[in-house]
Each structure stands twice: as C-alpha cells, then as structure tokens.
Length: 125
Image (cartoon, rainbow, N blue to C red; front, side, top):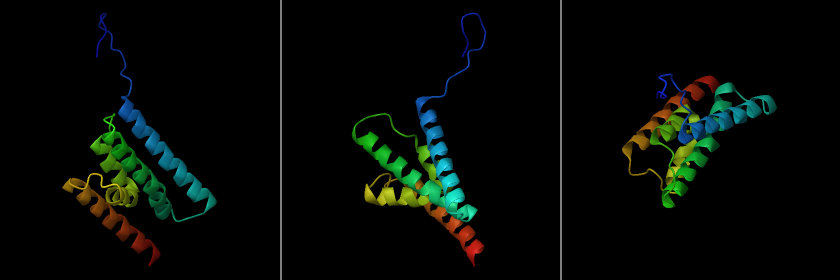
C-alpha cells in the first residue's frame, strides 16, 4: 500500500489477525500458569493450555455464524487445533455441531490428536 507521495505506509494487522494474536497470548498465558503452578510436563501443559482455547474459539465462531457477524477464519481454527487445541476443537464440534460437515476439520483434529497422543505416550511410558 503506497501513499500519494510514494512512500510506503505500514499496514495494520486486520481485526481477525489481532483476534488470533489474542488467542495465542491467552494460550501462552495458560501454559505459563500450568508450568509454574502445577509443574506439569511441558508437552502435557501445552496441550492442556490450548484445549480450552480451542473450545472457546470454535464456540465463538459458531456464535458469530448464527448472528451473521465477523467470523474466525478457518485457517485460524485449524491452526489452533494443530497447535494442541484439538481436544477443545473436537468437543466444540460435537457439542455445538460446528464445522462437522467439513472433512478437513475432522482430518486435522484427528491427526493432531494422534500426533500429540503418540508424543505424550512416549513421554510417560
């Protein structure tokens, strides 16, 4: 984006990108609390921090869709699931029936659950 004088004007992050940044910050704050207060395994704390974030993000998007408001981009929903929020994402998909008709959501959540399950199983066995 250029101004009239030809100098480059920095772009501000979109509202959706800002929401995603807030989501990441919330998950990292939860992760820090779990690590410092409960002294959990790093990977377990990571998954436990992202799970409620995934649930809330999917439920929020369902609410937004029902009221014809600004939606959470699908890539953000998938990214949260891949980052460890698959448990909350799957729960939201089943509880509020959100994104259940799109196979990519089932695939990403199942692959994420399998990958984290294998990693966690290897750490505790």
